[in-house]
Image (cartoon, rainbow, N blue to C red; front, side):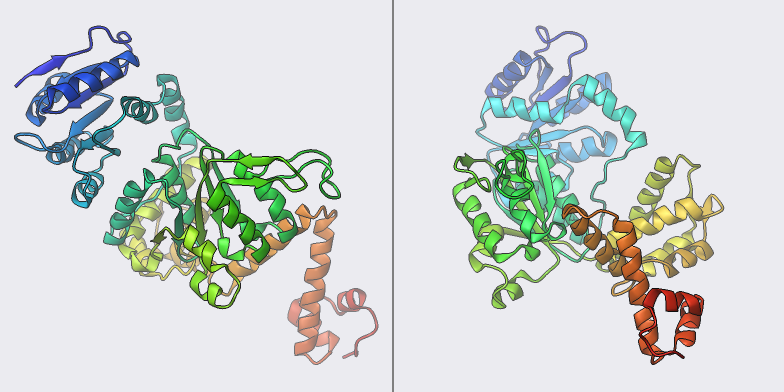
Amino acid sequence: MSIDRLAASTGGADARRIWVVDDDRSVRFVLATALRDAGYAVDGFDSAAAALSALGARGAPDLLFTDVRMPGDDGLVLLDKLKATHPQLPVIVMSAYTDVASTAGAFRGGAHEFLSKPFDLDDAVALAARTLPDAEETADAAQDSDAAPTPQLIGDTPAMRALFRAIGRLAQAPLSVLITGETGTGKELVAHALHHESPRSRKPFVALNTAAIPSELLESELFGHEAGAFTGAQKRHIGRFEQADGGTLFLDEIGDMPLPLQTRLLRVLAEGEFFRVGGRELIRVDVRVIAATHQDLDGLVGEGRFRADLLHRLNVVRLQLPPLRERRADVPQLAENFLAMATRKLDIAPKRFSNPALDLLQAHDWPGNVRELENVCWRLAALAPADVINTTDLQGALSHAPIAGGRGEWDHALGEWARRRLLEGAESLHAEARERLDRTLLEVALELTHGRRAEAAAKLGVGRNTVTRKLGPGRKRG
């Protein structure tokens, strides 16, 4: 058993510590030298046993590279042992055998990344830099973590483990990904994970909900425009594709994109180039596009509402997210995570669920999926009177939770209408919304009461004079 001491000429006592475990001495030497030249303190080990022995004597490094196939315990066994004792230690698995078993085993075991041999040394050093941000950034992130926890994918059911493995494999591949699933299942979180674990992670991640932008403005949002391209375009606007250059563009609700824009998007995906609206300069970008939808795109193609060739471009790989009702075993972990996050954000004493409350959460169907569960947990954090949330608290919260076809969809439709009107430049939107709300309620009530104003007013809980004032004298009096 040998240990290569390679830290003598590193970046000093404060340098980040990296271990390289590989039975091939030449690989240890060249990789350690490249990392040392980048300012890291590096130790090399020729076996898993040597690394584990040093771990007990000297403590864990900041990052560990390990080969898969070695005498004695292989790299995946080493990974399992490291994760059992040091779950936060990032491990990069290296192998010349990039088969499904090796990659899936690595990610299933908790590997941070999989590096295929032979690899470019600059890529390996860059991967280490992405995995180990500057110490100053790490300290800042630690300070911020209590105040603003980063949303993340959570789950231990077979469906989620399969999803995590797929994300791990796809992150390195420069392929378009189509994420499908019901509303609220976490499609944007998957897109974030694909970006974060990819070589593009230091470049921008730009998201756009295509359903939230009026069709007449969507082209400008995607591709930008030149000054004077249309009324109100007083200066050049850089679109989302240019903003995401070198990184990832996430297009949510892609099924709502108008057909003319689908044609333009297809050209960008095929050629990597476009013109701004009103522009003559050909813009070239390097962008990975990840799209998402809750709609049946194959059905939309059959109806002529979505281009088949665009679907083929976007659907190189499809990730289907399971609804929460199909992974009920994940509900307790998700609920406790959301509740802890909410109490930290609200700066209140921690709360927890009783076991019967967790059972009730797990039995709920969650038509709004993870988003609905998160909203319920925030509501409980703010309103539950005691530190322990019981079934009585929960039943009250669930009875007011948004359900499909109910208040949740109404709120969503109202929000989209408000967003569209504001983007159109509307002013006094509150007054307009109240007027439309009042008129709609009153007209429906009058329809159900056959025009009898007194009865309509009683059903709505307003005075008859209110009905008369808002609708005028033109309707039948009751």
